[in-house]
Length: 363
Image (tube, rainbow, N blue to C red):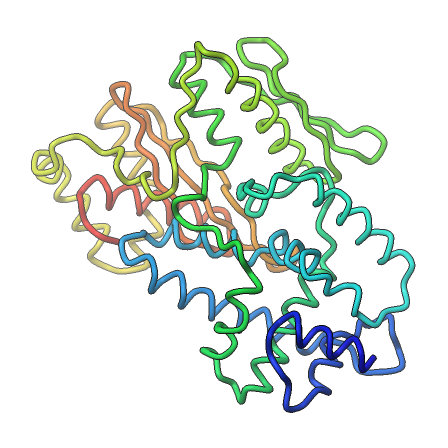
């Protein structure tokens, strides 16, 4: 164990004053002869989240909260942290006693080696066909907590060490649109129909995407939503080679630029609505979805389309980020909302963001 502790300290570039903290961080619950990393993982999840939130907030002064949430999810999600653990070989130094765990990690590690290094979308939306074993993200978070405690709760010191560990960091410039949303936008722009069909077969989820009735993409995974993402990626890859298709990727940092209507005229037409949205705080925000629907009806626009862009956290504490799009006069309005504990609240949040965009206010 001494050699493992020394090696991990070299990897992270930090020398522990209390090496027993690192030893605990590198002990899985299947290894019953010593205390496991479970308490440290709990702390590490929180402090790593806060450290990265500080970083992304301060380095992106012009980026809105929806895009900031997506950037945070892309950089410290289970998918990303699992890849960090593989890249730095943390699992090799983890004390454990589970052949099943070893098999799961090996399968995932083999799949990761086949991924494109610059495919940041897989870090945020799910990668390949293999689900990232949670143990990999757990050990990264546990090491983060160990450093945080050893440095006497110095968050700046933790980030100084961990920024390099998390490289490459996904930025607003490299974060692309969610694949399913992207292909819907692309087909809508080209006037093509699109349909996803999904089913289960031999404990695998399979998804096909049809564009104008033609099978264009196929995806499969243990998880239904990743199978759908993989099908969308497959279809987009094929469409990318079709010269008749304009593959313009809309990045998070440019989503707010879709509004082109004269702002003064629009603000005048909807002044009453905006005052109601802002007047009473959260209670009024909860009505944003209804207000956006009413506005679309009044202006004879298409009904708002809501989608879940991302899900964060464990199954019993899942949090959601939703998007909304509204088509008016051949123009697509798009917004991404805040992270919320229920889909309904996430939809209200993104409706509120779109209303704010339409009136040129900052939310």
